[in-house]
Amino acid sequence: MKKTIQFPEGFLWGSSTASEQIESKGNVVEEGYQKSNWNWMFEQEQEKFFEQRFAENDFWNRYEEDLTIAEEMNFSTIRLSISWSKLIKEDNTTNQKAVDKYREIFKTAKDKNMHLIVCLEHFEIPQVINEYGGFGNRKIIDDMRIFAKAAFTEFGDLVDRWAIFNEALANSAAPMLGIHPSLKENRTFANYLRSLWIIPVAQAAVIEEFKKILPEGKIGSIFVGSKILPRSEEKEDVEAAKLAEMMMFRCYVDPAIKGEFPMEMVEHFKSLDEWPEDVIHEEDFELFKNNRINWVGANYYKPTRIAAEEGEVENFDVTGATGAGSIFTHKRNYKLFTFWAKPGARMNKHRGMEISPETLYARLIDFKDNYGNIEVIITENGMGVSNEDRFRNEEGQIQDNYRIQFFKEHLYWVKKAIDEGANVTGFTMWTYIDNWSWVNAYKNRYGYIELDLETGKRIWKKSAFWAKELHKTNSFEIDEDSLGKELDD
Ligand code: BGP
Image (cartoon, rainbow, N blue to C red; front, top):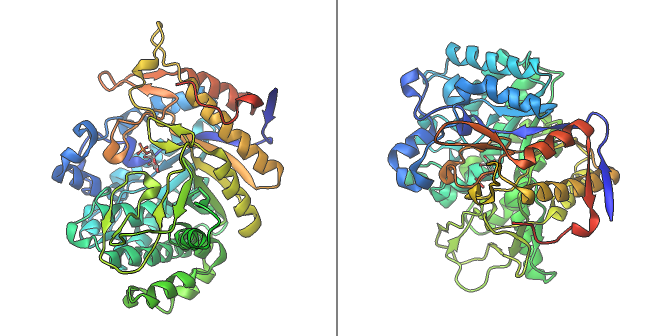
């Protein structure tokens, strides 16, 4: 049966993106900025990047054009991020050239009436910080204060809403596996555990700086928004999922919203003789208590399913959330948890990811019931598809019906959560123009708008017209019989 799904008045619609993924063409050191961790990794291990490509969108020079597309698509919001390596110089002073450029970009978005969301750290840090171990070293807490302070001071008048991290989970796990940049000698289990503490401390430190400069402002952080699901109701699976929930979600979220770290996780690793004792400083507890966020970003692509470990335990995959499937080798004689793929589940076969909008709904209800019904924006959601050329019609337009259906189903479940009282106020999909995605480079295309890598042209896909209407009417139509069915791809 056809049904119209109507969103509340003032609901924010738009897209998310990230500085490193769109701004530059190649290494920017010659333009007077610091080398980023990604610039360095590309120099060192270009073969790891799909088709050996680095970012080519060139938003730095084409922002006017790209923000005009956003305007034409009736965006009421956009989420950008600031490059740490560009804003801050190696001596920790502010780079005026970057300030001027970001002010131009942010003003352009504001002139187009967009609620401007800006994220501070989206997987990119200066290489000098990566050298000393990044989020595995407490030194980053003070360095991040400096970066945040500069951003709040320079752009506080233009930005409507701030986010501290994008997916802290990836900052902890991916560098340890070499999926994100890191020095081999820094890839230790102890550093991984350290990062589970250091990231929330850095988060609280940034909030402390924020309150001094923008006391009335909106400050949040962006987390992976999947509910963590046990394979079965068996005790072992439930326990494994509980541990995974602490290590992948609660250690970042609980301090930020409740002011308390889940110490059960620390006790667990202490009892195994694994916890790095040097990482906790007494004053951190006060810092957590006094510095909380006032909104949450939830990124959601796929469910995280967890099972108890069986058999061989010496390898540990800490990145099931990214789907990259790499293994972190750490000798141990105790069990942690393992990622589990549900047999027969509906898949986005292009990306090897399960499609399960109900799992986003479950997390939204969790925020309502267990986190004081904090304001939530869905800060990423989307369908990555490779080689979309296959879906081009005679007029040259990509017919991405699968993407339209993907969004309809996720939004259907978001609306259900809203109807049940969840405080969800916006949806910024990933991402309106195809962009570069770390080691996957331009493999998985997520855009409403196609990026032609040969010409740099931005070309509307079918979904862009659908989304333009969605944003205008604040509503869409869905056939309820189509829910949960295979996608038309
Ligand atoms: C998210 C990141 C984004 C983006 C997206 C798609 O986790 O926050 O930065 O890269 O994933 O990633 P991929 O192209 O690997 O599917």
